[in-house]
Length: 267
Image 1 (cartoon, rainbow, N blue to C red):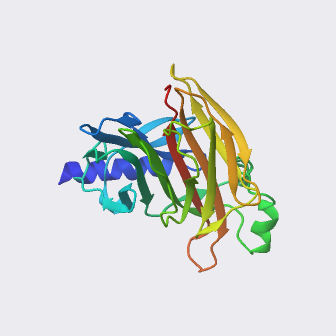
Image 2 (image 1 turned 120 degrees about the vertical axis):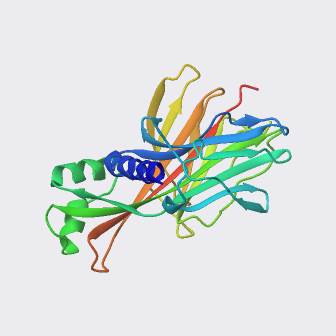
Image 3 (image 1 turned 180 degrees about the vertical axis):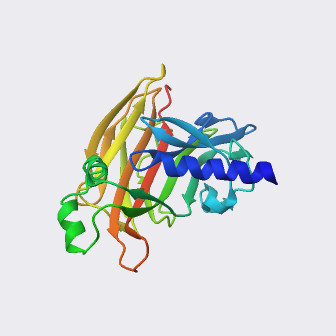
């Protein structure tokens, strides 16, 4: 039990110290799996598409599912498993792995750090909004949750993503593993089931030799971003929303982080 408690404490410490500018994502060992193979993926936290592996801890997980078509199966794992996901591959098709965390919080001790985060994630007029809500000067707390999806091809990888009821989510409108994929990844960003128009999508593009480039994109009036992608590259899409908390608790802002990972086959 001591080891379990220690691992849990370390996991929480990683989440707390990895703070606001750090992304959370699902990273499969391989994005294309044979039907007789296994789907193995790690939960990751870090920057620039590089980070630490997070083990499976049930108390930090709100939802963890493997979705194939209309079938949704909860991930069953043991405390401390790393990789957190290691399951037999289903039949041919597009697999969507879904993960949502429980909430965590962090404290901002100076305004400059919060402003830097707000600028990075494109939260407009944050200082005026903070003041208009009557929120205090630092120190103050932010509460955050992570909402990640990953697209994995089993066999032919045919199929489509769909809205899966996450608090916030990317919905892939194109399947990068489909033979007719034209090199443009179209995604819709949702929050509470509604589309998010004119919001920033940060794209992390990892080349086969491990170099990562970062570009910024925006959704249109329908909440859709169209991003050109390259064969052989892996991608992390990130979009963050912020909302004031007015229930009188310690935290004054909620942030909801949407993430999507996938790779483009070389054909």
